[in-house]
Image (tube, rainbow, N blue to C red; front, side, top):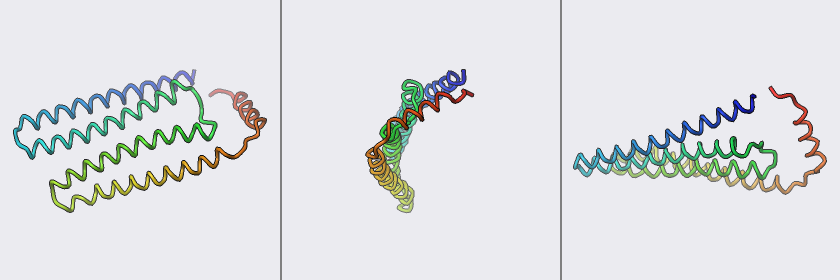
Length: 169
């Protein structure tokens, strides 16, 4: 029963996040239309940059919803092997890196149209993105090394047998 409730919660979260992503895209389109109606190039530029930022956010939110659906509902598995964990975390972190990179670029373009001191925040964000990429590379390297460590199949089977004996909460 707990397993079904857990899957139901993940499904509800995934559907809700997907709806939020659609709302962000709709709001983005509405914002750009308002900029077009204003008939002012500065306003249009600003609203288009805001629209791009919202679409980037929508993509990130939708990717999280997709991740929840694929990993927690469809696959019904725990990440017991190092290669499974590596693939899953790589996909998830890549989504975050792409979204943060795009947001940093949008902020750079917005800062270009305002005071030069506004460039500090986009540069900091892009610096954090760079650290995320380096961290992901280190994780990949360490995970590959962990995957190359031989595992005794008898120990793995015993671990799985122990998990089967545990009472469900």
